[in-house]
Length: 542
Image 1 (cartoon, one colour):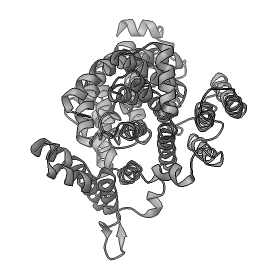
Image 2: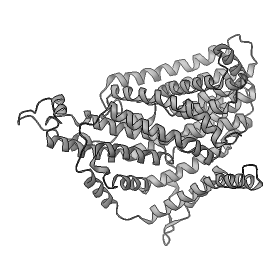
Image 3: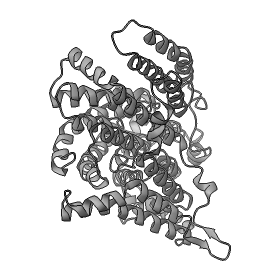
Image 4: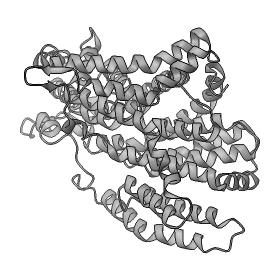
C-alpha cells in the first residue's frame, strides 16, 4: 500500500478537488471514437491512411495490370484486382466489405471469369453458418442471456473480493461468450459492467487513501488490466469454435475449398481447446504482470454484481426460448463429431449424418426456432422479429463471401500455383515448420494494420499455394495462419474490440503496445508449436 501511495504522490491537502469517479468512468457513453478522445495523432493517422487508399488502390492495380509479366492474362488481371482490394482493406477509404464487392465486380467486368462462376461461393454452407450464428447471437444480446451469464460467474463466492480473481473471471466470461457471439458484440455488451466494476475499485482506493483525492481513475493499472482482459479475452475465446470469429470461418472455408478436406465443428473445438486454455493462462499472467493492480483485496464488487442480478430478475420467456434455440444448434453442430467418434469417420452413418446435419443447415434450424418459439402466443409474438434479425453484421457476411470468391478464383485461374511457386523459390522455405512460422508471422503483421478478417482472407490464399509448391501439406500452415489472424493486440486499429476498449480512455497507447506485443510473440510461439500436434491428434485432414 505504501509504495503505491508514494508512486501516486503524497496525500494532497483537504482543499484539493476530489475526483468524481462515477462521472469520470460512467458519465458518458461506453465507447468514444478516436476523434472524441481529442488525440490528434490517432485521428491524423486514420485520415492519412484513408486518403492514401483512395489513390494507392487504383494506382497499384493499374501499374501491376500493365506490367510486361510472363503470365497468363487472366492471372495478371486477377492479381492486379486483388492487390487493389488488399490496399482497400488495409487503408479503408471505403468500408472493408464494399472493397471486396468492388473487387468481385471488377473481375467479372474485366473477363476473368463468368459471373455465375464468380458468385457461386456466396451460396456456400459457411455463409449460412454465419447468418444463423449471427441471428442467435443477436437474440442472446437482445434478451440479456449473455449478460446474465456474466453476472452469474462474477457472483460466484470469493470472486469479487480479489482484483486478480475478478480480472481472471471477467476474462473467462469473455472467452466463453465470444466462442459463440461476435467478439465485438461481446466486448460492447460487457463494457458497461467492466466500467462499473472499475468504478467500485477506484472509489475504494480513493476512500482508503491509496491514491490522491484528485487522481485520474482512467489511469489505474487495475483498470488497464481489466479493460484489456475484456478485449484480448474475446480474441482468445473467438478461436474456440469455427463460428467464434470471422477469420475462423474464412480460413476454414478457404482450406476446404483448396484441399477438399472437411474440418468438422467438433474437430475444430478439440484442436483449439488446448491452444485457448494455454493462451488464456498466458494472457492472465502477462496482463497482471505488465499492469500489476494497485491493490489485491477489494470490497463492494460482490454487492455491485448482486444489485445488477437483482435488477435483471428471473429469466423471461424470451431468454428461455433463446437458450433452447442455442442449445439445439450446438447439439446439432456436435452430433456429427459424436457419431464420428463412435462409428468412425469412414462409416456410412457418419457420412449420412454429416451430409444431413450440415453446419449451415443446423445454424439455420436454430435461428428459425427463434421465429417459431412464442413469447406471447395470443399476440403471435415470437422470440425474435425480423427487424431484430436484420441488425446482424451483414458486412462481415459479404466480406466472407468475397474472400472465398478470391480464394476460388486464385485456384481456378492458376494464380495460386504461380504465387506459391514464386514465393517458394524466392524465400527458399520448404519445410512444414518454416512455412508455418512464416504464415503465423505474416498473419499477425497484417492483422495489426487491418482487420483480422481481412488478414485471414489475404494470408490463407497465399500460404496454401506456397505450401503446395514446396511439396508440403498446406493444412497445418493454413490453419496456423487462420488462428494467427486473430492475434492483433498491439494497436486500436488491429481489431474492433481493441478500438472499443481504447475508446474508453482507460488504456494508454503505450500500455496497449507493451501488453500487446508481448502477447503477440507468445501467441505466435504457442500456435506454431501446438497446431501440428493438434492436427495429428484430432485427425483433421486424415
